[in-house]
Image 1 (cartoon, helix red, strand yellow):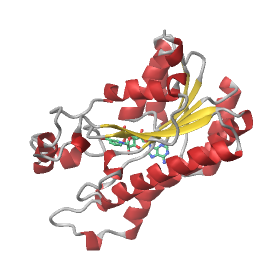
Image 2 (cartoon, rainbow, N blue to C red):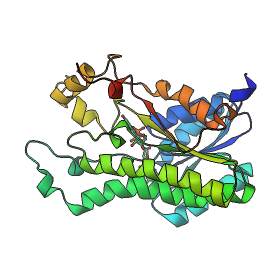
Image 3 (cartoon, rainbow, N blue to C red):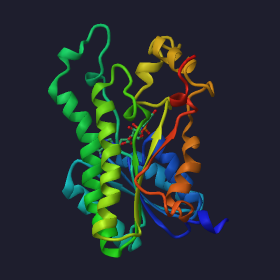
Length: 272
Ligand SMILES: NC(=O)c1ccc[n+]([C@@H]2O[C@H](COP(=O)([O-])OP(=O)(O)OC[C@H]3O[C@@H](n4cnc5c(N)ncnc54)[C@H](O)[C@@H]3O)[C@@H](O)[C@H]2O)c1
């Protein structure tokens, strides 16, 4: 393997690693010789992914973790350090949207309950911040590490309907920059923080918006997205892997505080 992209022996902690996008990241990193710790609320699914990686000759553990509970994160950190002795890579993947924070013809912005907005901000922003506190401290003490946050294309230019999710991911971008600077100015020049912004990937969090639940046909919104994506398709989880390996390896060692779009050209297209 090209030395620039080599991640053999690096320890990767992946929150939300049982989910659609981040389980693919876990598999890809595991395949390249990284030791994987999958931290997820869904312990059973996390274990299934860890077992899959192990069965293919990789090294992986699953740790049931709630990214909104600092004690749970600290416990997970202890398990990771006991198992692997260090943390090189942190991927803050746990995130998502919910129906109750999403407007539609029958459900107006004016009626969105505060707790639904809070839920979305907690999961996407607070979960990323708390996890970076717990694992970032380990990196700060050792003086090296790489953090990847999961943002979204709607963080740059908000999409209709998903008011809280757009704002929460915009906050994740801001936090990515803030944290990159904070690590470098206060702890080490060898810690980097970047984010990946996937465009439209058909997954559990948006399936209800993009395909009709009854017929499986694309919704009006799904059609609009396709019409606006020059590459003419939704992303698949594998589309994230090249950028991920670049960002966690020495290939990007002077790349810091950035948000990298992976959107099939969606943001570049004016529609005309
Ligand atoms: N799917 C998309 O099109 C898309 C686009 C842009 C960004 N993203 C972002 O990418 C990331 C992964 O998305 P996905 O589509 O794979 O989601 P997913 O729903 O498949 O996976 C999310 C995972 O996070 C876990 N999780 C939820 N709450 C948690 C908590 N409190 N503590 C620990 N784990 C928790 C879930 O159990 C799940 O395994 C998210 O941050 C999402 O916002 C997704």
